[in-house]
Image 1 (cartoon, rainbow, N blue to C red):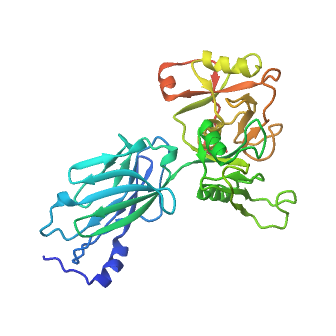
Image 2 (image 1 turned 90 degrees about the vertical axis):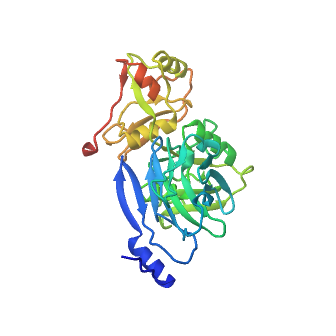
Image 3 (image 1 turned 90 degrees about the horizontal axis):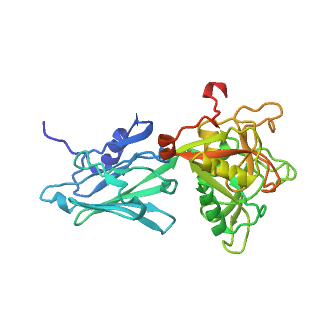
Length: 374
């Protein structure tokens, strides 16, 4: 039966009816877009609304489909370009495809490709997703005369943590905060990530840098010493601050671990140097702050014993709060930055995926709780 084309005014109404099917595949959220044909000759691009979610190390498909009147057109002249949107006028090239030719750029080399399941499929496949991949992406499809674009938001499952170095609170400018998060296996968090964490109960009274250069902090339990008790809950905003001259803490974001954090079994406490050597002798390294937070939040690590971390701080993760374990709320307890030479504690080590495959030891303790126990 021949096609009956809709008037263009009805096209977008019909498009909304067929627009989205959500399916689950390999624990990732895959969103599929269906586009009905149009008779105008224009390129029509559609992407999935909302958010596509994955985790660090995963593989994700950012959906994009296009349709155009291909009568007399050479499909090799269709150009597909994917870009990451960094700000209002800043873009990072991800992939460009023209016919059978394709090129990827920067950190996306050898990780990004087009799905191309059928004609009109311009979906982007990203393998081994990194923390830096988080954000908005633009799919642009161009033929000789027409072009159209669509947006996809890539989100990551993870955890927010506030951070300051041994120098103390409010000691980092924006660039130092960026580097501090990277050293602790994270990146500066976005406002959306902090807001989502606030919705989940994050309550922190110290202002910190965010990815966009603003300084904010989440308050779920107002109190007098933190912006006055009668002030409404929310994410308090200091606005955009001078990136070089002003100093605050940092709100960092991290995601799934490509390895495991464990508490090293030992018959004695250690100073910092001894703790570092003990992890190295086990074939591993001192855990970073972000790694301990990821183990607590995403792997449900629960250990009521303080241990050294790589930055010289002493912390421990609590999923199931109990007496003499640092308070009534779950979280990562922080004992600050004790003397590296004279103070003695346990130690949290980190073993990457390669270490897990090649090294086994009886002197490690990975204590986690099942979701039903929390």
